[in-house]
Each structure stands twice: as structure tokens, then as C-alpha cells.
Length: 483
Ligand SMILES: C[S@@+](CC[C@H](N)C(=O)[O-])C[C@H]1O[C@@H](n2cnc3c(N)ncnc32)[C@H](O)[C@@H]1O
Image (cartoon, rainbow, N blue to C red; front, side):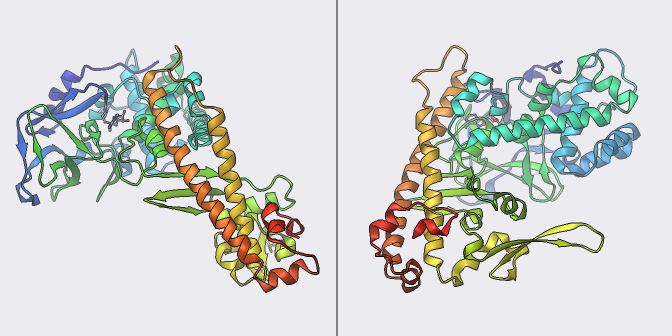
């Protein structure tokens, strides 16, 4: 059962009772962005920061972070019991979400509960928007719009992770009778509520200079702009304050905005906030990278690799940069000098160790870009990597193009989701096209220089080598493919 909503007009009273001060600003409903904060009179700041006064002050006791959850647990032994049962301190997010789950259940209960102490957050949660447009809450028909984008696999993984988290919490908490009654009896909390809480958390949490990852009531009503007029901070009294930036001129009724971050890609913006701001989104994308399906070392490479197997592409002005630590490990094999050994520990446990040219590099699996530099066939290995990256990006582009939606949303798709997906698709198509073009050039240059590399010529042996031999061959984990 979703928890009840409180009218946003009542927020001013909640704020007053909880010592939140609004100065010349108020929370309103905006045209397209849900709630927002706007000025109640003309506001102006000079070119330096000395004329700025706080527009909003939120006392420290309302800041919800891992330390605050710990404080709540000190005052409420039942909540401590629940926190311990579910697994305390796994992350700030996990603690805060469990706290919010309890507030949601308290807000939606019909009769008195034997556990759970209400607090300002029980009521504040009820002011938060009922409709959250993050893709985890999109319908199946809307998720189709993300086919072929970098967000598609990330979203699938997130939904599976949310499902596992929810089941774990349900299992652990139902072992405690009073919490079982509050959270699960009568269908109080469902999986969609958990997804909604996660979405509210992701789209509203802030990184504060001293309090760290936190949710801050009222400050979380501020929308994003590529040209923000304000910023948030913590003052010496530990209050969270909203300040106007220097050199700002706002008229009564104008919206106050902050920046949600200038380095987030379009996919990250959509994933975390449910919209894409083409003006501020960084031109970058991240794609998963899988080993060659016929690589006999594929599993060992995945187990041994210390990072996430992925390709990151970033476009800045005219240049495109790509990075992929896994691609280097993916493109080398036994013939090149890669070896996996299983070592038997004293306690009987087995350990997978990675060797490169007889050296143990188990702790350096993300450094193969450097490790291969001394190899006699470095030029060939590097070309394999470039080709793999290019092929992966080409496949991604083809998937994106082959799943292009129609020009208008279907009856089962909300316009906001359609517009956001279209914007993401446009940005990712253009990044992929630029990256593929740049990689084609890089590959061509590398292929030409291969013919001048005496190690490569010696490796290719008595065969007659032409540039087309090299250009025509695709990278593979089999060294012979290059001969
Ligand atoms: C921190 S909340 C801001 C308050 C929010 N508008 C509300 O109704 O509660 C972040 C959410 O506001 C919306 N939002 C913020 N800035 C936006 C923008 N520039 N364009 C569209 N939506 C925006 C998105 O839904 C985002 O997930």
C-alpha cells in the first residue's frame, strides 16, 4: 500500500514546527518539474559572495545520513534490533533506505503499531512527490524506449539488485514478529514502494561537505539548471543552507536552481533524476564489455579482473577519449604470455593467481595497458584492443539505431519518458558516431605503423604482408588471426 500524501501547502507549517527557515523564498509547484523553490521578492547579489544571505536554513537534526540513522537507533531499541538484523553499516544508502521504509510503513499503518517511533521524517516523507519519473519506475512499455542505450543493461542490473535487497529485508525483518506485523502483514509495503523509496533517495540525496551523503528536507525541493542561481553548503552552526551565487539577479516568482553536477552523463542524469538536460550533461557513456565468447580463459579473466569490465567513452570539444582496463586483459592470451594458476593455500582454500610473462600480476589486473608495453608484439596487442573497442561501439550503435522509436509516444508511454529517452538516444548516437570515427582513424594509423615494426614483421614470418592483410583481419583472442 503506498503511504499517504500530504498537500504541499502544509509544508510551511511542518517547516515552522521543525525550525526550518525560508527567507524570501517558498516551495511551489512548477510547470514541468514538480515542486520547486521560487523567490517571493526580487533578489540580487553582487559579484562577490559577501552580500549573500541564506535563503533556506535547515537545522542539523533534520539531516538524514548514516550518523542520524545511528542516533535514531540509539533512541529506539526496536529499530536497533531491526537494523542489526538486516545488516547495519553496509552503506549510508542501505541504512537510510531502511529508516525510510519504516517511516513509510508508519505513515501507512491503519492502527497503532507496537514498534516504530514517529519523527519529523515520518511526516516529511508524505510531502514527497507520488509520481517519480526515474526509469526504475517506468512501465515495461516505457522501458522499451531505452533499448540499445547504455542505460538498458544498467537498468536491468539495478532492478535485479533492488529485488534482491527487498527480498533480503523482507526475509530478515519477518523473523521479528513486531516488525513483520508493521512492515508486511496486510500488505503494508510492496516491492514498488521499495523502488519508489530508492528513486526518491537517489534523486534527492546530496553530498554535504561535513555530513557526507545525506537527505535534507526542503533543500531537496530545489530543481537543477545548467545555469544555477544557488548552491547549498553547511554553515559553522552545522545547518544546511541554500545560498545565492554571486552576480545573480532574480525577479519575484523566478525559480531558484542549483546544479546536480556538471560531470554526469545523459544516462546518469536520466538514471538518477529522471530527466536529461542536454545543456549540462557530460558527453560520455559507459558500456559493459564481455570477453570473447570462445575465449577459453574468459571465466578466469572475469574472476581475476579487479574492476568492472566496461568501456568508457568521453567526448570533449573535438576529441574523443576512451578507456577500458578490461579490454587489455581481454585481448591477450596464453600465447602472449598470460597464465592463470590455482594456488593451494595452507588452510586448503584455493586462490586464482594471474601471471604475465612469468610475473605474478594478480594485484595489477587493471594495469595491462602498461604491462603489455614491454611486449615484443605490443603494436599487435594494442591494435587488437582498438579493434575490440571499435567493434563493441559499432554493435551498440547498430542496436541503438535498430530500436529507434516512432516520432510520438504510444498510448502506453508517458510523454516525459518518451522525451527523456529520445534525448538520451540522440546524445548517445552522436557520441558513438564520433568515437567510431576516431577509432577508425586510430586503427588505420596503427595498422600502417605495424608494417614498419620489425618485431611484427618477424612474427608474421616469411609470409608476404601487406597493409590489407592487417586491415582486413579482426582482433581476436587468437594470435594466429593476425598472421
Ligand atoms: C531534488 S528533487 C527536486 C524537487 C522535485 N521537483 C520535486 O517535485 O520534489 C529532483 C527531481 O526534480 C525534478 N527536476 C529537477 N530539475 C529538473 C529539470 N531541470 N528538469 C526536469 N525535472 C527536474 C526531477 O524529477 C528530479 O528527479
